[in-house]
Image 1 (tube, one colour):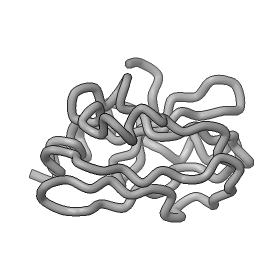
Image 2: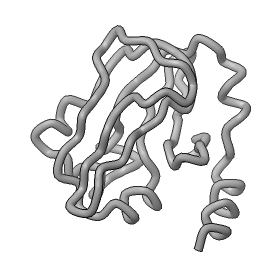
Image 3: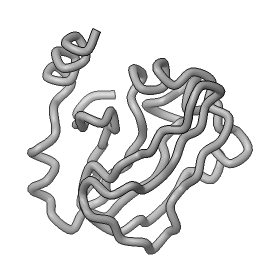
Image 4: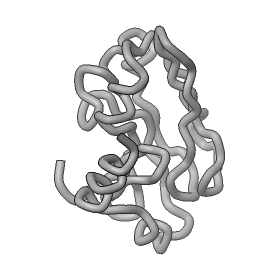
Length: 125
């Protein structure tokens, strides 16, 4: 997936107009292990950047998912309710979590590109 931006909390963002699709990175799903449950936000709910939006639970731990940008939830990946392991199998495609309509497009510029994220992750090891 090209053209994505990534937060320091390991959420990726793919922008289409004023709506962003959000998921967790391959690094994050690897760290979590086998995902067994996902709690998604309500469509129509609004969040500020940094707010807790969702929860991903694995056999190891539960991890909060934070809004990488501010806005209103316009859709969720309902397939994850029955198949939460899609996050492990395809974190950048089928395992997306939610879509959010941006209230401040400038926040996208505060996120890392893929090269910067690779350097960031390398520093965590």
